[in-house]
Length: 563
Image 1 (tube, rainbow, N blue to C red):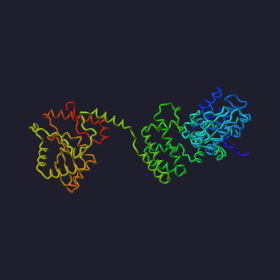
Image 2: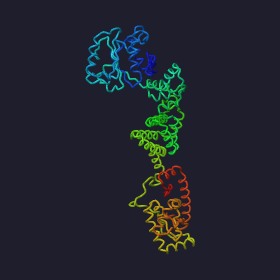
Image 3: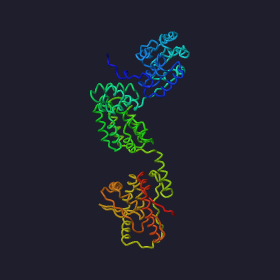
Image 4: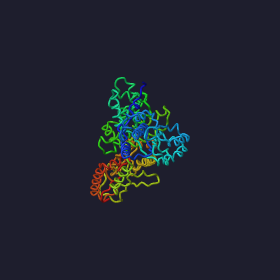
């Protein structure tokens, strides 16, 4: 006797053997027990989930000679002939090869004859959506009012192609994809009966690869049993079907989290060199990202989340490092990369660039979060720090220079050293002329530096050094200007004007050179001390630090409660 494959040998023969379609089984059994069986049924659903098997079991339940309603005996001649597909009163018709109006006309002529042996004459039309429009129209009258001894059972994988006029004359049952645990349990039962040794993880891996089809999973198990003479391992599944292991996918995700593009490309090259199917690998990656997203947004307990990956703890750990927005963006660009090209070489290049991009991109945050932070900063410093987040002023915009000191008699006499230096700088018109040209170059190069230097004066310029004095309340400006990148720009502008490499030295005026007016020397010292303390307090504020870093700015002025 020739070998019979597992999917045929373990085909369900009664309602209690149907896997994953409890809602349909319950309805049909109740209808049989209460004698409320309809004259026509439409079974719709994906391949390999039990549509034709359900049609045969229903036919046996209707025509069984010994069994009880809803429970065929599978021992009488009628049950055996239906199981073998040669019963004279149960006709299985392939809709793809009998799709014309002539075949339907034959059915119309034959339904008038009584069944030869059984209680009912049953027509099972598989892939009924393949019938032509004319064939559907021809069967409508018969389908609506068939003889009492006739039942129709239609099966289809594409119910949308069945006309509404046909569907309205049938009771429709939608078969669903079978869950991974149900398929795993069924495969374990088959292996136990067949004395096939296999690792427990093998059943789950096969169930995932079958994508909800029990017949597909049984065919895969049959192939693995022929390949492995001893025990079926998870590695055998990966080798036979070109599936990438969960460990590789997890390592690739970790390389994205760790911002390690070199490792991500290295893992991808290992997958390519092992001969794995690229499109299947991308599908696996998309499913893994989907699992991460589900775990990230779900508040359910560990056992209630349906994921493709088995290690929920690992998924939780990885999802804690990636925001839902980042995961949705990853899913989007991976899907786009899959659909861009079918050429293997171009697909490899696309994926290399994609993984480098995923491993180098920054964490995405919702736009509402950024706007809320900006709004919070605005409210916190409204009236204190002006123009936070405003663009750098253009040439047409005016930049307000520090307030010049009021013209009044200075009660405290400047020190002799400062007066001598001041007279020397004022008397040398070349310094001022040179510095004016430098300021023009600085303004063209970077306006923020020019704004910090506005109000400063040059004390001396020689072949090696230029001494620039800033007002006494420009300490923050001095810190900004002494940064290497800022200083380099100023020295570059000096070199353009003078033709010499000159270093810049910044000093703070100790007396007389202020950007704001103070009322009296003692009062001015007190105000300066308060201002300096307020500057330090604001500068150390965490939100201020974040604002400065976010906008790459600096503190220009700080005002107290009294302005």
